[in-house]
Length: 109
Image 1 (cartoon, rainbow, N blue to C red):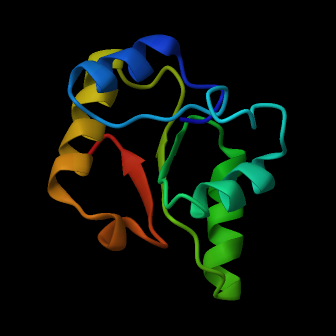
Image 2 (cartoon, rainbow, N blue to C red):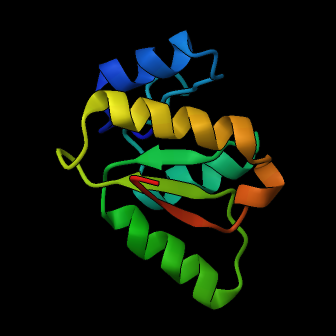
C-alpha cells in the first residue's frame, strides 16, 4: 500500500487474509514514488495506490519496456472503502503476481 491509502483499506484487506505491506511498514514512506515503485520489485509486491502520479510512472515503465510488479489504482474518494477492499481481495485471489506484472489495473473492476 502506498502511503496515501487510508488505514481502513489496509486493515480491511488484512482482515480478508491479504498479505499487506504498507510504505510506512517498509520504511519507504518518505521516498519518491519512483523509488517506491522500484522498491516494490525487490520483494515482488504489487502496489495499490490512490496517487495519480503512479499512473504516469507505470505508463513510463511500460513505454520504455522497463518491468514493474504491477500497479492497482483507484481514484481517491470515487469508491467506497468496502468496494476497494472487495476489488483488491478479488484481484489477489484470482490473479497471480505474474499475471499482474507490468499491468496497470484500475478500480472499480
